Image 1 (tube, rainbow, N blue to C red):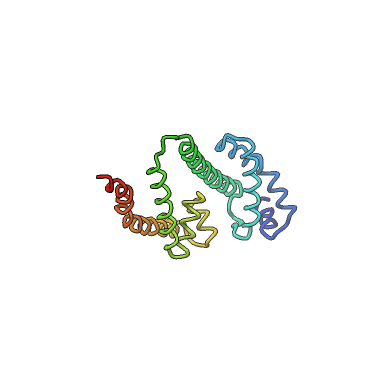
Image 2 (cartoon, rainbow, N blue to C red):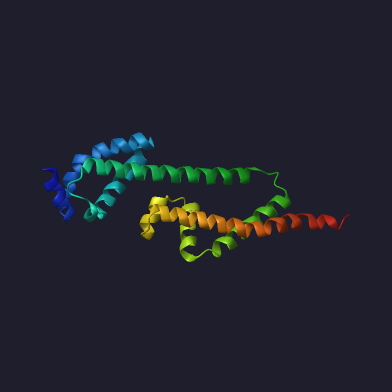
Length: 192
């Protein structure tokens, strides 16, 4: 029964999709709720899981267990969502800390702006694909798997590009490290 239903689903039968949804949505929802601990997020991600399941139906092997496939997919998508939420929270906490700290000196503010400029310059010097991968993973907080899917490459290739990007950025930034420190002290040398 399941193989026949799955065959119809893979061929694009919407009725078969509705049956699959009715059969497995409650189980997937419970799994997502367990992982996310938030009913609204679980409900939204449930919809995304089934949209992705429908979109990728041609790649589904009919002889595979549908329940296991859906649960693995939902686990992966929930983990990606949790990672993004953690990343966003870290950025929010950092920004909040920065705005709440009134003791930032002029030198600290200057250093932060200069460091940001240097980072932007370093990222702009990366080869196009490496720059895109760096931006998607480090700036947008996407997982290696997500970026690999978007670009049609493996997560290992994404990781390799990130390692090379970080090395190139560190090398570029290290050229400016001593210059930044010197810039801060030059104004004081005039007074000596």
